Length: 315
Image (tube, rainbow, N blue to C red):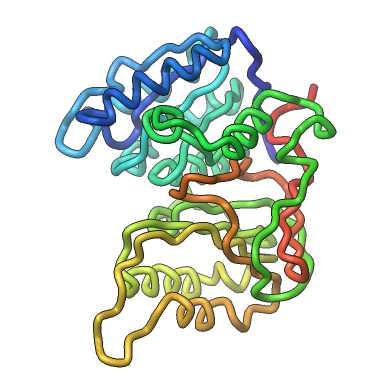
């Protein structure tokens, strides 16, 4: 059963956590810029105790990051929880998250990239719809793209579907395999998603619409990740595929090299379901916020993704 959080409204308090890497160095200034941006929109901000703690590439020890995460859900003054940034380490927290408390007290949770592990685990363990979208020390701190901004706030602030920009409109992408399909949209960063396969934190992808993106990976690693999806049976279970941004792919430098299009054809070219590419989602500047777990319709004939419901409770 899908569980939806209450919407946030002007004047609410937004919590900030670092479940992966810390916003240090240049990102420390971006964090403050992002906090100022949120406050300018009329919200209050409460940062976790260990947001900027640095332990190697982690924002503090596992226990510290997990405590910040759990405490934001336990804090009754917090309405929504934003990740400061991505990086590495969210998967290390999964076994110690208080899923039972979160099930009883759902809240908006927003992040992407390494936060993919948290989105999928929360959906699997609680049914909670979470939001794969902009983060405080990245897009919000750098200066957010207007379309990205509209998608983010309309996704989490307005409870009525007819008022939601990101729900009422169809987002255009490129058709790759024709067909029409409906299902819960699940996915995120490919390299993170595949690490959950075979674990108790991985949701059931049967009849889902799978959305994928990634950045900075070698082509052969993307090939390996997609092979893992195929070999695990995921590609045989889904109703459709949405491919977002795959940025900064490190090419095959062998003679007669393979390229990304070769991988598309190998893994998606013969699927008996609609597939679209170039959806504005991922590590690029322009990104639609994805309510992970909500129902969508995928039109592979015209290259459109239509959000069928709000990600927040409409009361």
